[in-house]
Image (tube, rainbow, N blue to C red; front, side, top):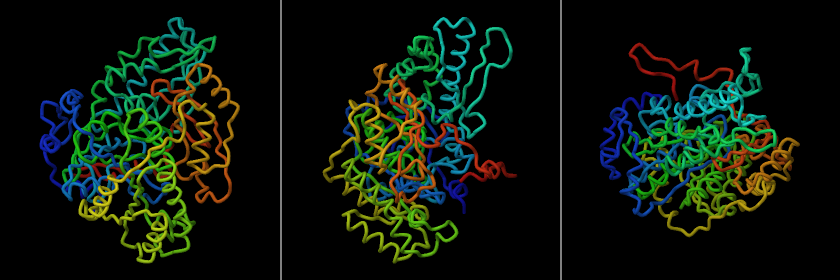
Length: 553
């Protein structure tokens, strides 16, 4: 059976029953049918003094086209913790329609380790991402309307882009305003995918609706003739955008197939944004559960770094344990094996590919100072020799290994990981950030590139250097940096998997995000609007003769 058939075969509990498990009264629920609800932020008045639970961060090796199952492991771990008697909660991101209809597929786990209702979560869910898209594009409309009616603020340069939550490479660069009407100024523009927009980042980093409104007001939308920033609040836009987002900012409550509560909220990509679910959902979960399982997108070089250097800084939180996910297939792929031969035992390639895992482990343990365990998403064709080789290599680094079979067994397949994670949470750690906020922008980028990626140096384009100078002159040089980089490699070249030779990180562009409170650093050939693959998943998604959705995976 496929994921969607497995999910459809499980009888879900009414969402009020799930809420009761974590002491949420119905007065705090805003139901979206029987199995989804938003949680009112007024619940913080009740739970604000509760002791925080333990936060467990799930990350991974650099992803491969084979898929590592990081979300599946996260869900399995939460179910496994429940299985051993712990009060656990999931805190995950919302899926984007881009990957669902593109190549990556949905983001609700797999097999018997899924969050549900999976079709709803992977599609429109509770409308959060649509609301973000609308807010983003209302701001664009207000900018161009202001220019049309005389440009009182003196826009010389507009830096705010429109967005849509689909992969559409044709929209990366456009020319707009071509109607020929009087006062309509043609200009070059472009679209981002919604999950890479600053509004998405703001929603995920805001502590409440009023913080969100203030952050929206601080968005720099353009510059005037004197190179002075023009902000959204200069257009009086923050109020209307906040109104569009008044429901979207409330975390969503759903459940796993084993009825473990799950807060799913916010969905920024980790290769082109900061890659973590909302601070509100994470903090709410920490007040409601003893163990909170969350994940950061893609490999630890991207999602985990941003989780620590951006989210932990902003929210004042830290993980008690980190789970680094891998598969034997992924490790062999990083060791040079083709997809056609990936199921065959190949100890030489595995030993080579383990270096990718060990580099992530070294970063988490020795650079960030956190406790870490490796979780292998086990497949039936993994051999005893391969497992023993990996176990030996990890023991040399004093790192525990857990074989996880949550896909086929649900929480029961993750109890070993759950038990080990509970023990790991009690160990001492020493969280360290990769840079100081007082460092200049160039230094921050170089510290991440050399310490985390292992780059020899960083090269900045003239455009990037000019923008860096402008940002620091405006007084925003003390913001954290959010590096946009390919997810497939420590380098900025997606084809350089093994990174054996010294490599350089190439910074092409820098964008200031004053509302979100960070600086985006674009490297290599990364795009903030992805494209569809040659054969997109959209071709196989359909509604069958019984009215059931098929083809989502």
